[in-house]
Length: 196
Image (cartoon, rainbow, N blue to C red; front, side, top):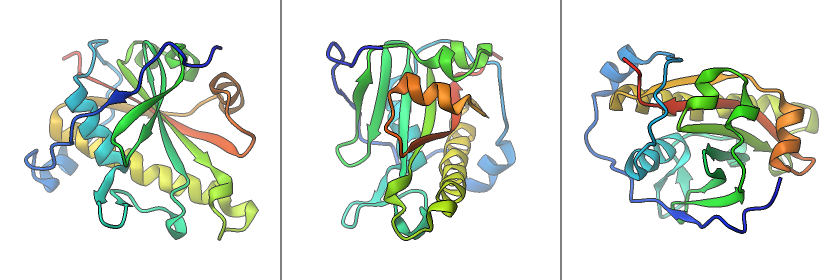
């Protein structure tokens, strides 16, 4: 895999933080949907999803929309798009290129991942969990991934989008993503418009 020299940073529009369905209705409508259209997600939709998942909701402090163990903020959201792999940078609100390769098929051989316009890959940077014992770090990362993925599930329910979380071949994907030894893929989440 080649690094992302050809890809440019994707600046995201400010997230739309007003409107959407009421919380209780979004919870009522939250569901897993594997039938996703391949249609590209508009930049605004992507911005809203990423912000809901793990964006900054208190700019003065840099605190996020999802909690993290001991405020370690060890989770990184990677976004696999047809044109390449990006990492979500919350503070500048942008997608920074990582690889100019379509890694969606490497996350799962199933059509919902290969055809989805975006696959979010939750990667724990375990050394950031400095206050946790080393043997507990993956446990905390799994919990924090759950918070973020549920935020995205609820945002999808609010916006009429389809989503599914799924397990990974972590070692193979880590190699394809060219991750450092302390970085571990935890889970992936395909997002798109529903077919029906």
